[in-house]
Amino acid sequence: MSDVVTVMSEKNETLSADDIVAYLRNNPDFLQNNPQALDLLLPARARPRPGEVADFQRYMIERLKADKEDVLQSSRTIVETSRANMNNQQRIHNAVLRLLESRNFDDFIHSITMDLANLLDVDIAVLVVEADGRDIPHVHTSGIRIIPEGTVDKWMRGKNVLLQDNIAGIEPIYGGGAMLVKSQILLRVDISAPATPPAILAFGSRDPNMFAEGQATDQILFLARVIERCFQTWLNLPG
Image (cartoon, rainbow, N blue to C red; front, side, top):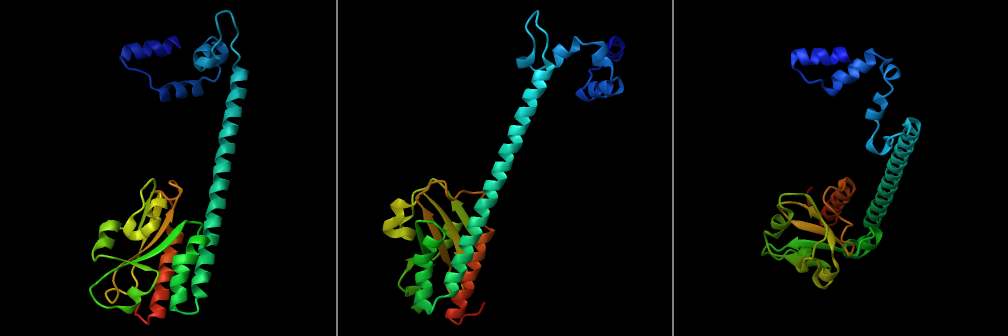
């Protein structure tokens, strides 16, 4: 080691961690020939007190136990995430089947505004459609909330899906149920533009952390596409 220090001094350079690792790799007997160096390599909690012997083995066992616990925790997280994804997928499948079972257009709207909340385990589901100044029959169907023209783009901020946590419910969307909503997911529904006005499918929950930015949205977006196609079929609109 003195040779290494001498070289470092002559070159006025500082050894990097990679340099030290490379030296130890090329000199596997170094720690055996210099056992006092083990005290310097131990973490602070494993360093011996004056007069004590360094228990490197105990430290390694503790390290292995900690690593094992990290692996177990990661495994639990993966299993829980997989289980949640499977549950969500099952809910979406059931929701799609319910929509396809609708006997008429009113039943279809009832499925969206009443059945989906229960099937998707949320507190409220609402379909919101922009008013466009014309008397379009399907816009005025009972169970659909009407909002001023331009509101969808204002709320959606250029996105097809928006997840928000820890919020106050929006009264124009949820009406009297707005006070209950603490988190929500808003889905843009393009039924048949430009023949129909922009719309939003909103799901609200009293759980402030049920929906949050960063969550996967592929399944719920699939549901939105199914609803769009069902609308097109019931109203005989182009896709």
